[in-house]
Length: 86
Image 1 (cartoon, rainbow, N blue to C red):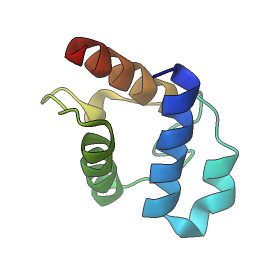
Image 2: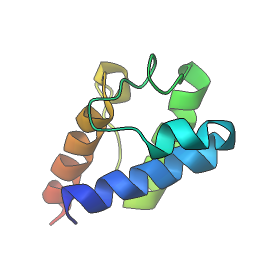
Image 3: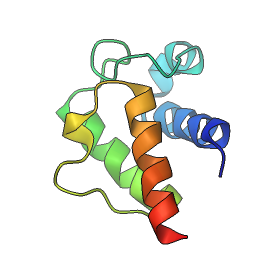
Image 4: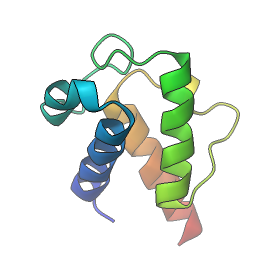
């Protein structure tokens, strides 16, 4: 799966979790910050993790999403986890 495909899937997940911020999410970039840029709180991040795990069939480690600042950080982590599965 390419980085662009992961990014597009991640945006779809974010929109499904927060329909009200559709325009903000649709225009986000890899540099967009999860908390400040997308307005995610701890509950939103938890739902995001669950959705990512289900969609990509990966598991976050304890050092997972809390260590990520940007959308690009999450994409890099997903790519790494998908590479481990291959």
